[in-house]
Image 1: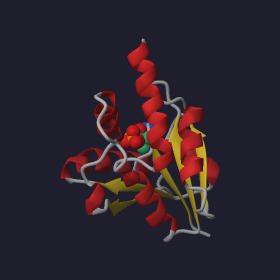
Image 2 (image 1 turned 45 degrees about the vertical axis):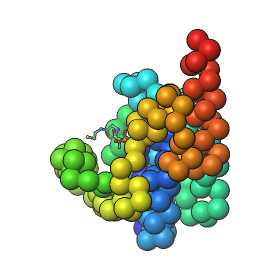
Image 3 (image 1 turned 30 degrees about the vertical axis):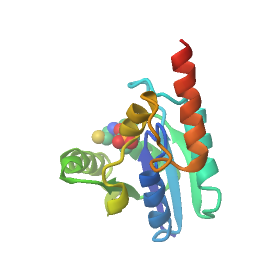
Image 4 (image 1 turned 90 degrees about the vertical axis):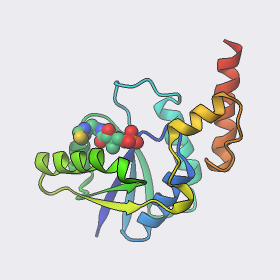
Amino acid sequence: MIRAIYPGSFDPVTLGHLDIIKRASQTVDELIVGVLNNGGKTPLFSIDERVSMLLEVTEGLSNVKVLSFSGLLVDFARQMEANIVVRGLRAISDFEYELQMAQTNHKLNPQVDTMFLATSLDYSYLSSTIVKEVAFFHGDISEFVPGPVVAKVQEKVLAADEE
Ligand code: PNS
């Protein structure tokens, strides 16, 4: 039984994330999407909103679970009995940070290994930050995020406009 964790902030989930979720879920028995709930950054979406959007867009994927976690990823992995962490690599600029995280996690828990999936070319430019930037200036994000997420981001933009 191979269980892997795909961790991230998912603020919000993008089509790039969803592509990694679909492809990773085809290579493992169970994929847990771990949504980070740490205090550091102030996210646009609450933890419940991020989990709920992920549940909605992964509905048809029977071996995918969505859970939130706080604290260290390796502790969550141990708790879930998962030894593999999946991360998407978009460009060489991601590499340094991703390698540092993978090596730190492995040092903290030698049973945990990170596997990288190359992001599909279609989404290699995409990030949650870019989505929010475009949305806040009223750009079209329908090619960046799954359908149900478009409206949720637009609601946040409207609320911010009214402030
Ligand atoms: O989507 P992101 O923000 O790039 O994901 C980053 C994430 C959630 C994978 C990373 O910040 C993380 O694992 N945080 C949990 C805290 C932790 O374990 N830190 C040590 C790893 S260097």
